[in-house]
Image (cartoon, rainbow, N blue to C red; front, side):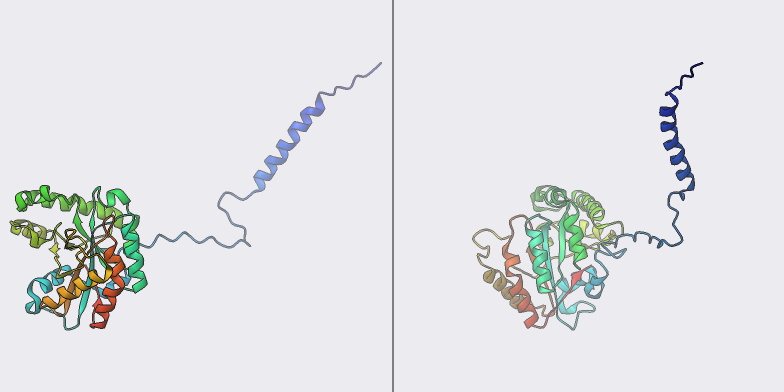
Length: 295
């Protein structure tokens, strides 16, 4: 009797054996996340460093040279008659109308190169953070500068119709700006400093908005020297030397020898103040000033 050997069993075994081996290996493997006794333990990923010290508008490094906005306001407005008027000379470099993708990085590079901090008064709407996003705000903070509120819209007609402050519009504009700046800087961000677009000195009828902004903990900050980089074309400095001279001339006229708050701009296209910064810093250091930020 002839026996016929079936070849159909061999392919079946060829398929089953790899599956059995895989199952055995899987059963012997450690569970996901388990470590071999000889394996080093994995360290948890540290949380990112916050951009600000909670409850402030600056980082830890800036604590050493941050001055409360209420004091700086009084020093500017009352001069030597202000309480706690400083015995030492303090300069505050301030930049308005940023951030912008061209001017702000150049300003930050110049500040770092000259080893000085600044205070940035930010536009939060389409002219500023709305265009650049949060990255430049975070860089400003990470490099030891302070960040304050300037405006959401920077729209003079909306804020000061007929050159008179509209309190409701000013308050709404500030609140909208503050929310956006806080979103960029981080949840710990709080600022007590505010600068009216165009400056408090330029408008009428601001007493009510002053009071209500004060109820929010805000002190408005003007300036007593400037490079002139936002003046009309005929008055605008044409060279860095002219911009630095404008600051020296303003300081000579102001009877406030120990406190200087310098207005400059980092809006799109603004270059002259950045180019003048080394000379401005050199002049101030030569006159005995240290540098602070406004908190």
